[in-house]
Picture (cartoon, chains in turn red, yellow):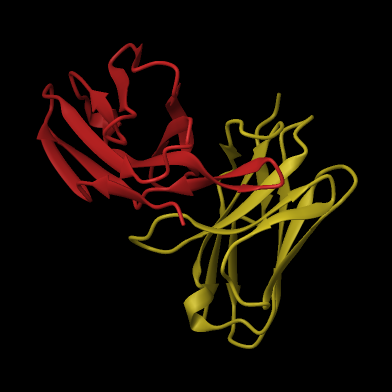
Length: 115
Length: 112
């Protein structure tokens, strides 16, 4: 079945630097790629998503890029701040059951912003 | 609109007991999915309910079950609890198909 590989599992960056998290997948039929942020003690929250008809989407300091040919998509956070410290999950619409796509999740990346 | 709510937020049970968790989706959302998250692990999909019917199911034993009511509220039940069931249980609601999932804060279950 569909699988999503997320790297790295832990990322430590200096405050103000950029962070990049990458996910690779195998099913070329996937066309929806969200990113979620999970802070300590909370449920994951959507921070940005992209559909397959675009290659890049940006929202202030956060951007997502998609390379459908190479089957990978990445989350880019610029000018990192302490509040960016969290676990980030990528996902994509994978298994189809009765015209409904179930999200397939990456294993998560723990992002640590060093002051 | 109010977000997804889950009750209770914390729960302590002993092995062999059973537990029921509740999830109220965002108003108007008809899909509710349940996930198990253990420390250091990703999100393990349990099942999804849509209009009171189970639409998708993950690879969990039959001890894990769920249901959805006509008002879209959903409950998850775990029978004969095991130590390994200790986890954060998250529910997420969705308006339709192929759309964004909105998560609740989770119920943290500890099995002793």
